[in-house]
Length: 404
Image (cartoon, rainbow, N blue to C red; front, side, top):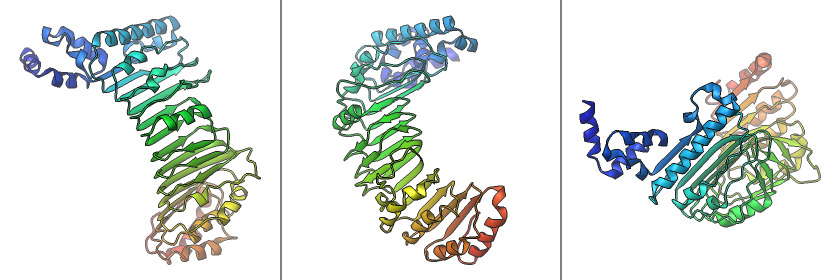
């Protein structure tokens, strides 16, 4: 029965067979050449190449054995080069490479990416863990066919910079960079050389630039990165913005964000210059969904002028605040309630020891002003049961729908 099954599969066209093989890792696909003469070169037409160091580790103990680890890495390098040399100039859709196991001390050249770029791929994804700096060839930053590029570097010791001589990626729509230091020169080349870039994802990066300006970008995520300078963001077509950062120096200024409808901020300010204006809240006038997690107590003082400059949030229907102490941060919550006439959904995460007695009546009055408010969620810690339950009892009769 197995032989009959293989014969039936062998009757399929090369294009169909290569698509089937693309569901496997490249190592598994190459191994199918032993099945029959028909299969010897079928893998060479695959539109998807997937390489992983894990497939070359015979035993998990090899991870911590330098000699064994080096041997496995050399085998992976030889295999990648062999596949690229024997594949031929056939169209490549997706290229994936994973060597993301901790404890990697050896130096590996990524010159084979030059050969990958020559195959005009649509997607390149590289995920690696290293204890030394990584140097990517310039060829991947001048690949005219590339629509998605992901470079993920787990590096605990050395700093990895990306410093291409130029960037010319006319088809690139999605860029994901993790664990990389980015300077002003790179961002200037990026936005001038990527006229179709719609989504930018930066995570665990050291951001040594002060401006993100693009007329085409639609989605921007800055996660767990270090902002060395005040960041000015001017992207008129961005509709989704997420900034999660506990080490932000200088603040954030939003300019020309007319298309922004969904935003999330989790910010921890360090060494903030109080003489520098922080135009954050006043740049959110068109958002419909907003999540705020302002970790520092200093934010109330930092945002005082920004709060005064706030216009009406006519489109805001859903607001969530996190790690807020209603007593000390009430002005911020009240600002949004007062300036959001269409607010329907309010979520308050009270993870601190909240002292509500002093401003409980004030909070009730502000909430009552919102005639469209349908839902209030109050998430609390055990230490806040009595005070929050009192607030719930007072609010319950005045809202049309309540979830807890």
